[in-house]
Image 1 (cartoon, rainbow, N blue to C red):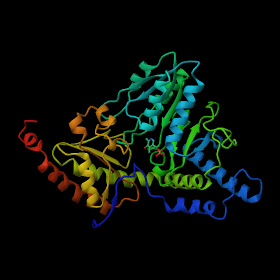
Image 2 (image 1 turned 120 degrees about the horizontal axis):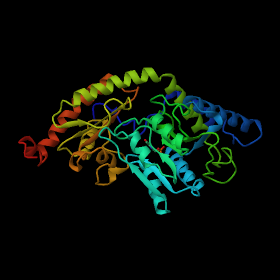
Image 3 (image 1 turned 90 degrees about the vertical axis):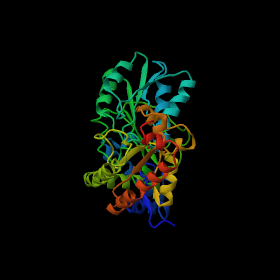
Length: 393
Ligand SMILES: *Cc1c(COP(=O)(O)O)cnc(C)c1O
């Protein structure tokens, strides 16, 4: 057993907050009724569900009736994209996205390509930013949807969403953003940011897993995702996950009310990680040094295998990630790291440390004590390291 455990994979998932758990408990116990039932037990559950909807809406500058609860962030992404593609197919079949989206978006688009849709993948600069000019140039008469993530899950880069959304709005094109890494962590205002549809997942901001939401701007019609009993204004049938919605709402309300303090605390710890770990030779920060998520510190270390680093960190009690969890099963380096211009062999040495307000200064001390010797050890075993040191590589 390792001496201590440090959880530094909050971009992967977070621990449920106590506030969220407390908000969920009544709906898992005495107030278990079906919100569609007309007796008082059902009405109690319905009240809880609608209170949760109002809280989620308030946290992102939306109206209650614009929030649709889903079973996950992935579900919200799939619904927004497939729904928009279906409803707009008479106007055209061209969709614009970025080349650094989460697989919940990019694989949905890959499916649509097989159905005859055409997708333009916008490049990003070395910091992982989409340029407004590139979006402008990609728009065609048959463009029906633009989907660009608010913040990247691997490198933490925050996109200029307000500006990109304004371009879409001016051209009358639906604009969706996967804001799953951003909501609860940085200020989000759907109206001010020109967003038509936005995906959220509770477990990325200390809510429960298996609950998400799709914001759909009033007036934008997206066809139902599930047909059945007519729940969620007939657009996403199925008995509602009341406890999940209540947990999500409580976690989001808590995150938003503590946001400025959380950003300050988390950014300071993140900067300490960045400053100290960049002292390691042949290391590089990935993502935008300025416009990045408060809790995401992501790096590449040359001549080190990311997977090996993760396993050795795990041995020492530290949970971290190398690239995205989804691509860790394959040998290809992450599409995000390649898109920001890293060479294959460099991209293989990636580590993402994602912290939040529950992280302590001692946690950071422990990471800083533990990671550099691991990198030294792995480099001493690498056949490439000698060549790198002597300048041959
Ligand atoms: C986690 C994540 C998802 C997937 O959300 P789930 O709730 O796990 O389905 C999608 N997009 C981004 C950017 C994410 O970080």
